[in-house]
Image 1 (cartoon, helix red, strand yellow):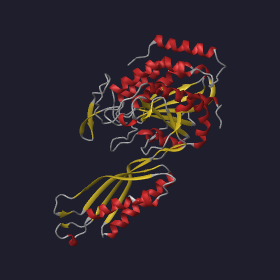
Image 2 (cartoon, helix red, strand yellow; image 1 turned 180 degrees about the vertical axis):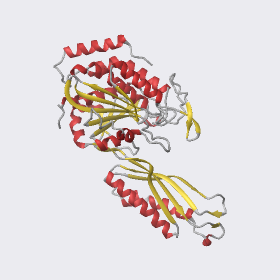
Image 3 (spheres, helix red, strand yellow; image 1 turned 90 degrees about the horizontal axis):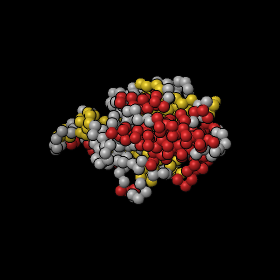
Image 4 (cartoon, helix red, strand yellow; image 1 turned 90 degrees about the vertical axis):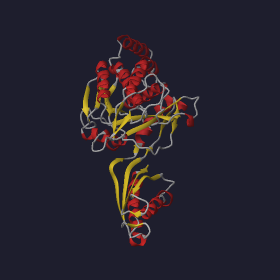
Length: 442
């Protein structure tokens, strides 16, 4: 706690003063943001390491929220806390009039026991789903928070020339709230984070990803991450002795046919050249012993899509396939989609992307690349359903390590090249200035 140092803040101010004296007023093309980023980089690394050592699970980010609020207040940023349980919102209002935009970072960690040897590794343990587990920032959310704190520090130094307002959204429970609870982006929206003054007209987010080399920034117009809907299918038959299956109705055989039938939806029934869809069954449960055909089987899985219309079509096809195959075996099937988790497509607004790309190409050059979509899901998508938004990938893999040898997100060995934090800050700061200055029309 309390890691902001007066001497460092003065050095940032000195860098800012020297930079501004050498450039035309409020010109993002000539602003030396990198010098300002370099000045706050030690703070950002310290933030990231503190947060990494003290992870908290979804909807339990109490100490995390307190730390973020303390750092923002130390910078002079007005802060609101307790949104969607533990969410934190800061507002930086520039001296010059202009639009309002939002930047978002997620806060929660995962029930993963860390297996790295870094000195700031997590040793935290807690209870998750009735089991004792380790807790780890195994998906880069510690870096996301640190990046946004660094951006806040730079923007507060630029406040006198900032043409507009930036809303900083620190969001809990991106990985999903615990069973029986609400949370995440959807809950923050219900509690007015986009509606309450100041109301943002656009929102930006990023994710640190292990498969991309440090320094690289991935963008994509349209769907960049998939929708995710949990799937549960209950197949009912008639219990009988395993030696006399004709006296009953076998739900296990029907369930097996349903699993295979569902795979014909992505392979034979949807337009593969438009966007992929995925149907995956991850759990099947039924029966108590080897010679009894049970009366019930339950399957659980996930549905993924990169197009909202295809997502709705997928739901209908899954329900029809399961019900009809079960019926053909004289069994029955009940299909439950999105009982608990339902994330929309993370959809980058094409008009907003066209507006921002020229500035990003100028800022990042060849390090900016068009990324392939990822079939993982992200609840930043809920914000994008309310206002135009863009989501980016930022690489964290050291250049000398091949992708297949570097730990993936959600791995207990997950780590990052901390130079990626500066890349993330630079991305956010260029987006802020290019949007607020209004000079990046397509």
